[in-house]
Amino acid sequence: AQTVTQSQPEMSVQEAETVTLSCTYDTSESDYYLFWYKQPPSRQMILVIRQEAYKQQNATENRFSVNFQKAAKSFSLKISDSQLGDAAMYFCAYRSEYRRDDKIIFGKGTRLHILP
Amino acid sequence: GAGVSQSPSNKVTEKGKDVELRCDPISGHTALYWYRQSLGQGLEFLIYFQGNSAPDKSGLPSDRFSAERTGGSVSTLTIQRTQQEDSAVYLCASSGWAADTQYFGPGTRLTVL
Image (cartoon, rainbow over all chains, first blue to last red; front, side, top):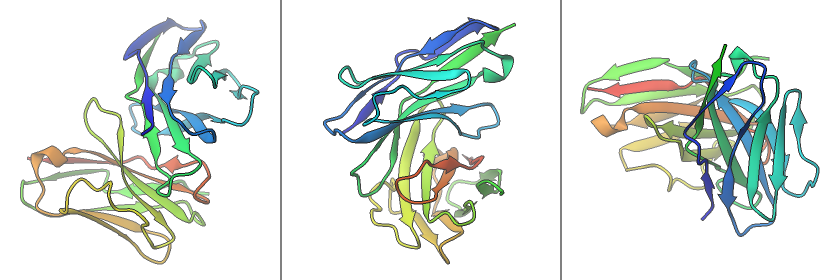
């Protein structure tokens, strides 16, 4: 079974600085998708970034970028120029290309604090 | 267009009562998902609908949980004879097709006293 591990329960970063959130996953599949979701206090899960496993190029979305290392099964999120609005719980997630139920498997999350 | 909506936003109930949680997906989305997020935990997958059918219900935690979807749109998650361990945030998500990105609603916080 696939698993997703986020080893940092909490992190803090100074406003305008750069922070990297770690994620590792375990799978025997070759085709899959990886996601970072953000969950602010409002509870709404917001998609931050998505990576297809077959793509070697790392995904980027404005200030958010990933470092996808397929062989190492690592998928870290880098947030540049951190803003107060980035404070939230961040979840790394995995979705198989093959599963019949199409569920997303989530890590336990990293709570990110932004220090003014 | 509008995002995924869920109602109620919060629900407080007494142990042993039945509750119904509602999810209204993004218009045109054929796939719909239910997850449960307990305090301090990640998200636990409950069930997935493609159209009105749920191919696999094995993620539901017990036979007190059931879900249905009608007209390929609104879905309800029903919990019968609620227990305190059912207290959690229940999140719904939808996607345009099974392989697409899932977009989440704001969730329903269920508290069982």
